[in-house]
Image 1 (cartoon, rainbow, N blue to C red):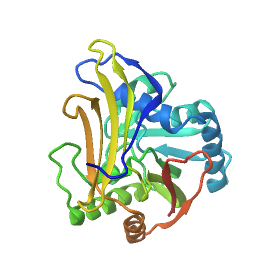
Image 2: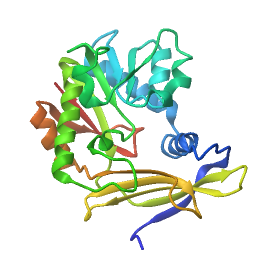
Image 3: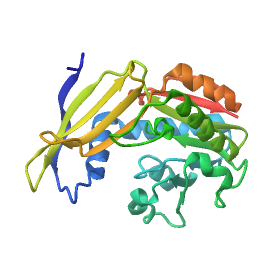
Image 4: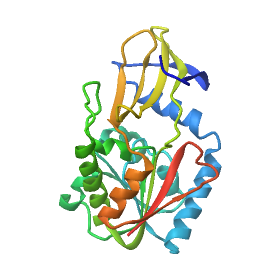
Length: 265
């Protein structure tokens, strides 16, 4: 039994066409239907933040974990000079095909210094959004084993890779789950073919040193599972300072779900 588990039905509850166990479309729909009902306001807020941090009319921006292109695609269409990167470019192939001249650089953060498509000290502003950085610590499966020492080194290696492509004085936007995160189980919809209900679940297991998240059929074993070492704010500040960043937490009106940090080179 999980203490304080919040169980509820998504405001965007609907049917999905699940093919070959691929829950990625469900993940995106569930994530943004629940977390960003004021999307247009968030978009304006982030655009202003980029300009305030860089004080440049045309800053060079990198979305370092672009995924499905949420937010950064629209910033690109608004005129921002954005490059896209992800360790799994296929996930964003649909959105990037709609953008003239855009491509997704395939690389994990720690690989940036050795990736030919990246120039050193090139970007004015880098985004690491969507609670993505926590997964730099290791495996994404049910066999994952927490290892705080190895995780800390991987966090440092990943931040070092991001640091390498940033100009002196540049800013890294990084968010993650809140240290006060409450475990939840959300019914997000159902599979149109099987009529099975789909559940989105997250739980931070502090005592065991890791956090898990999943999406899958309610009556079956987990179908889409992510697991990562724990990353609280104290550890994030520690690894950021180790790499050489100045770091501070900020409050954004329309980012209510994750803790947001600005790391300056």
